[in-house]
Amino acid sequence: MTHAPLADRIRPKTLSEFVGQEHLVGKRGIIRKLIESDQLPSIIFWGPPGSGKTTLAYVIANTTKSHFFHYSAVATTLDDVRKVVKEAKERKEAYNQKTIFFLDEIHRFNKAQQDAFLPHVEKGTITLIGATTENPSFEVIGPLLSRCRVFVLNRLENDELSKIIERGIKELKIVIKDDALGFLIQASNGDARIALNALEIADSLITLPRRQAGSHRSPITPKLIQEVFQKKSLLYDRMGEEHYNTISAFIKSMRASDAGAALYYLARMVEAGEDPLFIARRMVIFASEDIGMAQPTALVVANEVFRACETIGYPECAINLAHGTVYLAKAPKDRSAYNGLQEAQEDVKKHGNLPIPLNLRNPVTKLMKEIGYGKGYELYPDKNKNLLPEKLKRKKYYQK
Image (tube, one colour):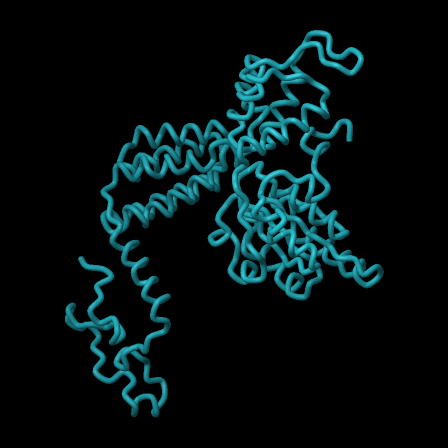
């Protein structure tokens, strides 16, 4: 482990060593309770980068004495899944040992790939732990999501990040000035991985005599930490640093029809190496949510931007993203379709499956026809005629 990244060398092995996420692993935390009762279900961890998703999966595996497989969805195939499932079956039969399949960035698995987990999660052959920075409601298929518990991890607080950095300092046997430590904490933005990577790089950049009798002669200074953070390529995590804030600013700038601001936030994401498909997906959503009926062709443009990003990739697809960004920002806005859908969804949740008017039902049998199915149906009724269930007849979800 001496050549492993610092984050791996100091990775906690038990719940007592784990820092942060008290709502999950504290004395009354649900994860702790599930482990202690040996009732661990398949899980989706949803949270920002560097918040402890991978580490918590390792802790769970270690605590439950389960065999642990760690894969990234970016480089994993269905053959890999089948191989793990086969080994899990054999291990369970031979040693009665459980298997945890940890899949990082599970949102990058397509529908067919996610489908492959269903029977094995259902039977308990494997315990799936998926990690994602994306909302699992949109990125994980419904059948798999319904078989997993979703736990939300929060961005690490400064005091929590400080404890993790202190462990890194002890491991590296280095000295860091208080103001440099404060700067490192602020610059890491709640991401433990970024903080530890920066600390390790700072240590490697020191050119003065390194160590004597186990002590460090040259303390790490704020200037050195600043130098490290200017070397983006050494630190960047594609789903990291200001990920949520930047995409939010990007969307809100387009919503405000400020093409210049939108391009600026787009440039920040592009320069940071953000996945172009992540940006393009948000543009497709924006085209219907915020532009909607004001300019329906916006959805066509957004979809073509997405396809261009799929086909071309970086660096050239940044041009397609810029083109689409300006188009969407300058387009007129109309949220009526989106607002109408939300209002209708609220009524569906509130009232359940209200009886559909008989005239709208399809009389596929003679009996159905006799009891009134389809009776009075008009192909093109008057626009003022209400087609909603009786209880909602006064509702207007959309008006031209």
